[in-house]
Length: 312
Image 1 (cartoon, rainbow, N blue to C red):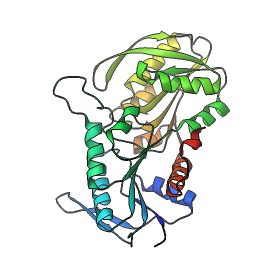
Image 2 (tube, rainbow, N blue to C red):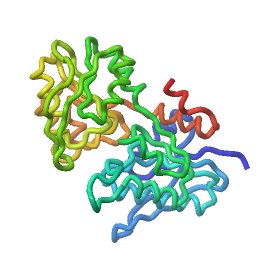
Image 3 (cartoon, rainbow, N blue to C red):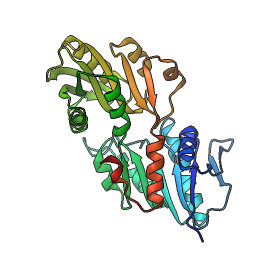
């Protein structure tokens, strides 16, 4: 039986799946994913997958629970159809923000998702810019962790000069330092205090941003509260312009309105998550594609080649 590569997708981001297939020069495989009248998910794989190497592309974005259930049910269907190996491709890994116990009687949802994917039959996971790198350790199967850095670095390097890379919180310093090193730029940090989920208060700027173009860097932008308040502080500290870059444009609640009303000149995101209609109309938001990066990684996993060499 030839080791044939097949790519499937749920309803989360079929456009990204098609772009990945275009890069791989293969057709997107057929699967019917729909709802029963009571909302339950129905999946039927539309072609033979026996002995095949299967990749299921499904970012667990809004509505998170629906897309997560689509993914686990598709993996189960493929396993029962005798697929040789099933790789769950989550460009955006939902439930990743609860990756440890920070208070009594709270869950570790990132681990729950890992257990679900493993139990239903996923034998490999491919994701991009995990909220916390230690999530890889929640799996007892191989995890390939990709970074959107090559795409974002190319854009920043070709678009801006005299920049200072800014981390919006202490947790993102390592990521921002790596960008600053590659761009030969300075580094600054926003000292942030968070009282409740989705609510934060920027306190002060650590580093010199005066007379420079400040670029805020984060793995995701959710409500945009952190970015908007940090941008205001950077402008007050003397930054000439403030821009922002992130991998995952979650953009929930009033995020788009906050970005529109902030001093941020532009927000550069990738297409790991499809933009909502309101975000598509926002002139400040620019989308870069990571389909080639994901497609190249899928091709290398299928061919048993190195994935880490993509980021050397």
